[in-house]
Length: 274
Image (cartoon, rainbow, N blue to C red; front, side, top):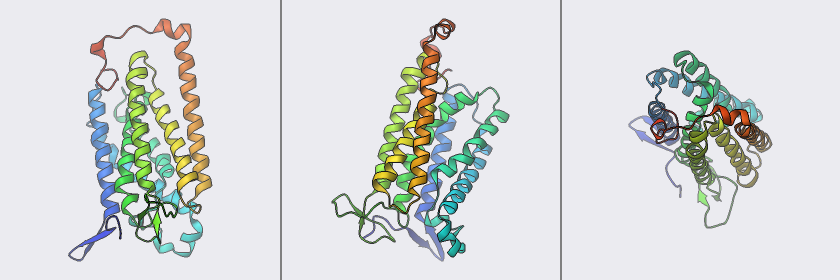
């Protein structure tokens, strides 16, 4: 049995559930980020056209990195290079192209939005979207499971023999936890003492840690494991370093003297400045 069909037909048209899942995930990310911008006193009208480029560059970067990492297969099956409906999108590859695109567009279209502030607003959106994307993407695609298992928690996935660890479900739960931690940091740290960048650094570091453990514990060994593990640890180190530097600066006497107490009316329900 399969948990869900990976494709269905509407007349002669074949519709892939993986593609529907990605579309819904991007739609959620757009609406949620637009709301967070408005709630924190920034315009959101510019985000529409920008988000189109974010989606395009995210998919392009994710596919390029996946193909390069699995070049041995695609060298023998070049017709599959563009078949993203079968899965095969690298999360790190998507970030490599999409994040610079988003930053450059935000600086041009919304100059009052500083890069660090934008990163703090976008980071929880990215993590929440990734959690939803795991449920609506790899969970619904061919070969979406992890390592083979005989455990009761195993599930059957199309294109894979026997039961597999439901890694997309694990990843969704991990990202939900990272999302909640990021919001807690936003409310209790960034919103109170004005540490710009700490939310994004926290989310990036924890997400990198989860990616490392996903690859190390649950995903097949031929899944580009070493490269993803290294990238996850690098993200953890970078995020931890940024948090440490920001914390040190916040504790310095000069920084404490420069800050003033904030009125409750200046803090949004999400912890940012209005």
